[in-house]
Image (cartoon, rainbow, N blue to C red; front, side, top):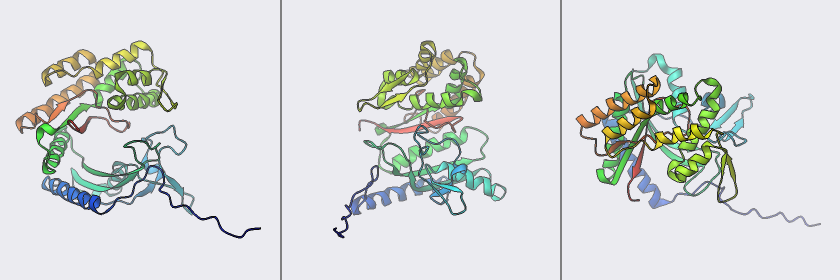
Length: 317
């Protein structure tokens, strides 16, 4: 009987990458420039642990169909479950909740650090990646959201991008919520189905309209043979939602008019449009209208968004 031990093979876990000297130097230089912009806007640094109690992360976890609910978790010796943070927003919410009485209002903070997702890895999809968050907590108007959009534009400018090399695409979750109310998906009892709809629309850039249509219906079979169950909506519900995604016009005024036609008299949807108009006024006044564009297809795939949502996209890259 052999007593020789089997040699361990050195291997990198799936979904993770090693970073070396030149790349780390570039990352450090980039984050330093972004910090400079954040602090110019009056945001202060905050660092939270990479672990949070799992129940404090809330129910907005990504990829909820996976067995571990999208996060890496362990049980502590006191039998409480802890998870690696999947973003920097949930830890901020916990921090603000614990320190609400002593924090200035509104509270401006930024956090920079790694986050972890127990997702299926793929091209450009990693289980650990860097986030640079900036948030204003306690503001009463969407002027704060407009400020963060302009700060994002200034950050890209600081990194050397010209205004015609990127676009910040902006929408408002209230508009989609209004559309979903109109197709019978309002109310707490429809929360899970709404989340499936959000995640389907959030894949528009990758899958196109037809791919989203499949995910809003019975589901989609991808090239690898994996089947993603859809929201199970009826054809008329699907087409109404698709009409929202196609509402972007050549000009901001045309897009706003198209959105008003889609939401009709729905109060929630009209409030979302009014907020976009208010933000657009701020962009026009401060000369950011060329790099920030209203785009109704922007949704974001988590259900804790309740108002303005935006994404930055590099052009021709």
